[in-house]
Length: 176
Image 1: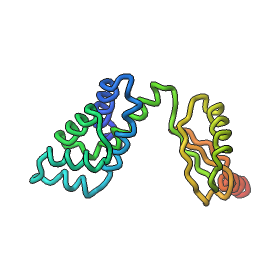
Image 2: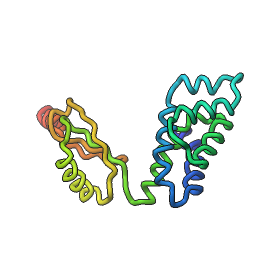
Image 3: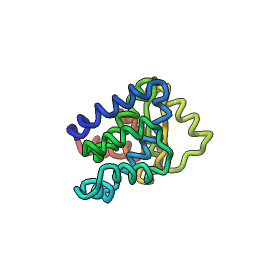
């Protein structure tokens, strides 16, 4: 994984510098491209020596199902011509991290045992923003295995207040 991150970093930084103030607007496009590049069939097509790089670029841009900014289109062209299509998801991830760092925010995933109502979600996000001391771009994922409570992942930080985690702590305490 470190090698892929090393390969992706210059591409992500170049796009970030080229985009300047409009970098945040490009995250949707890079995310769409990352989803396309994650398909094994597309990577197999791109690795075929009989397929021209221009054809791969055309397939990738059409598969993204969004109109690409010229800077993002140039990124796709450079990535394909250099044989780095597999790095595109990591490029998108690092680009998003650069945009978040610029805006002082972080992506957060809130795992909950049950769906969270929109009104309650606003309160949860506000509490989490105070706890993590930064603005959060939160998404919610339902995980019934938690039994109750929430588990929040912000970058490499985890806040686990789920019933499952509490039961695990009790199990450890009782068997120690």
